[in-house]
Image (cartoon, rainbow, N blue to C red; front, side, top):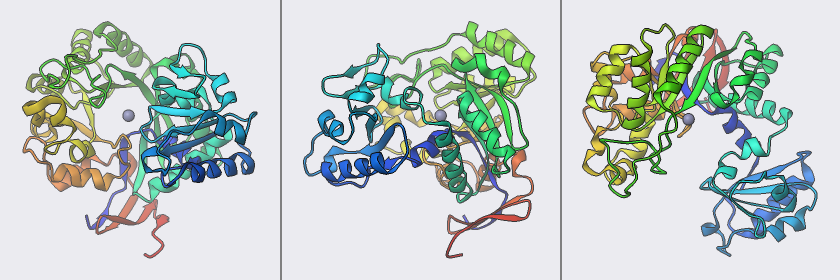
Length: 415
Ligand SMILES: [Zn+2]
């Protein structure tokens, strides 16, 4: 891309989580256990953090080719919890104080100090970062996002993140427009959240299935070719109907995660049975929709919040979609078909990676006609009302400057 554009809005982010990760020790470039451990020791001794989490070690890149050991972390500190999360995000190693903090019921090997799956996936909720760390994370995120030309986000949050955003906004530190979506497990706190000039509680995030990578996306016509399962349906139409009712009464938007056609079908059934609605409710991802489901979603006016970058990441021959669904994989992320059917799409990245330019290039050069759209259309789907009075200058796919209300909020050093 080259030229001057409106600022982008990323409609599906986990921006605070991204920022939190940035505040932590990065082990991705370490080449030995001792190198990794010395970075962790420096953080434990040098930072005021009550819990030290280090991210992205990969033992296959280390001389020793072994997981770090609980004893090695205990040697650094027996008081302060230390956690080292593996690059895959599904395994972590902790010292004794860290293991002691994990509630019962999680998959852990206390003896070895190894944590598996849920406890690692929800690390931020079990080992909660300090409120000050959350605020620091938001500011770090904002700087990076402005450098990508992003002036607005729809961020999936827990209530504490929303509060941190509004506090920073009252101090005049929030430049981008933030719409938050609170996950439904935190519904009880939703009435206590306030809006500020740049920060708005937009709605509620609901999960109805898992992911294709884990083969937990709930599918029917899209059959997994490498497993007998058909994914996991987490919510049924009755729940969707209840939530539509609640959201309509309170003026909230629902953002409903549904990837597989079985999950999408269940969500559509919820809307069909509920009847007319007024809020701009959305289905997140909508990756594996059948022809009929596309028609029905379009007819009911449901907004489809899709990730164009997924096409470049996984839709090429030999990629994740083909591995999972064989020949049928070509029917993934049919952005072009949906638009030509009159559908309403908004684009977001889901952080894979954060970069509107990457997503726009991905969908413009998509391998299948039903996925592909024109550059101008793709740019529009990556903008929104928050893009008004903003400007991004791009050269060779690189954002050189971002302006909000005529003020330069990012300028590349060599620009
Ligand atoms: Zn997401």
